[in-house]
Image (tube, rainbow, N blue to C red; front, side, top):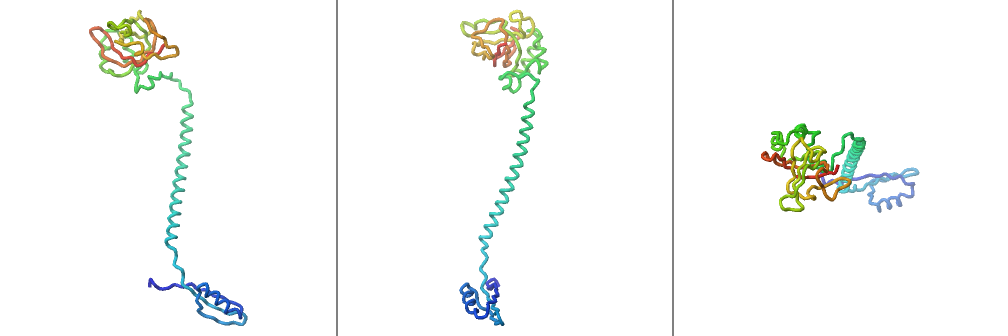
Length: 241
């Protein structure tokens, strides 16, 4: 039955003559005398008392704490292993990144661009820089790559005020270093820009620019005006060479 009392038992063998004192002490501790058998030197006294109910709630709580601790320790161990693997991976990556690169570093603007078209990575652009300024290749290239960014080494072929402005200009640019003597390649044009619009960069930035100055031009591709054979560009950066 669920309500049946459960007992725990204990046998004590006191020296004869001390039975009364032992029984009294045991009874104060909650023990009930069950049987007493006198012997020659010692008596045998049997006691019982109801078992105390097990503190299941406390045991359950303790078990729950142990389970949580086990989970935390396991998670910490797993994370420690992952951190160690990540540390080893980071060291490997750092070791690779420390190796010197044989590829020349691009300019800051070129690095920031998603894809910068150069004569080295785009055969069409390389061919365009050697073509005639009125060649059909200009139309094809402008149509295909309008809005993209190009970078090339060139020089200022001509520079004139835009309309009636004193500080805004139209720049005619050509590939290479020949300035006004340029005879091959498109006639690239910056239209209606001031010196600040050029976004000059480099170790020694000049206060002004002029015909014949050499730069590395980074620009956004615009339209090609067939009637004037002018390839319009918008400046992104202009690095002194």
